[in-house]
Image (cartoon, rainbow, N blue to C red; front, side, top):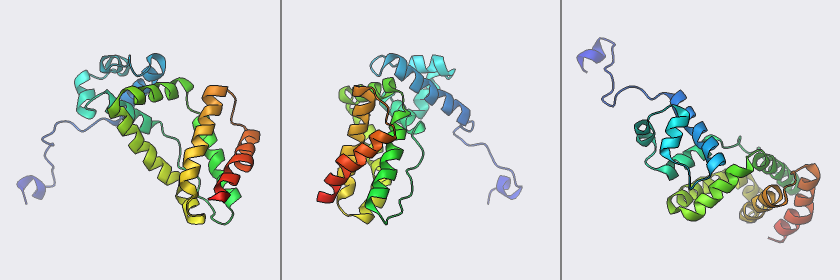
Length: 195
C-alpha cells in the first residue's frame, strides 16, 4: 500500500484531469446538429470544435476520426429501450414493438437519417460502426419475439424498420396508429406466421 493510499488521499491520474461529461454532451450535440445541417461529407472536426466550444485535440482524444464521432453521437441520441414483451400473444407483442419502433424512427430528424445513410454508403468505417450499433439494437429489440416464435425476429428486423423509414422519409407521412395497425395486421403478421 502506498503512502497516499494509507493516508486516505488519492493521487491525480497520470492521464490528467477527469473527463468532463458536459464537454462530451456538447461535442455529441454539436455533431448531431452539424450532421443535420451540412451532411456527413461536409462535417468536420473543426466545425464540431467551433460549435461545441471544445478544442480539436479534446475531440480527437475521445474520437479517433469523424466516423467514430458520428457513431458515438448516434448512440447518444438513441431512443429509449424497447418495450418488454409479454410473450403470450404474437400480435400483441408485434404491435407493441412496431408502435415503439415507429415512434422512435418518426421522432428522428429526417435530415439526420439521410446524412447517416449517405455517410454509411461513402465511408466504410462509418458503415462498420453503424452496423455494429444497429445489430446490437436489433438484438435488444427482437429478443422477446425470438423467444415467443423462433425465426421471426430476423424477419421483423428486416421488414419493419424498412417500411417505417420508407413511410417517414420517402412518403413523408406520419406513422400514426392507423399505419401501425396496417403494418402489423396486413404485412408483418402474415409474413411472420409463415416463418
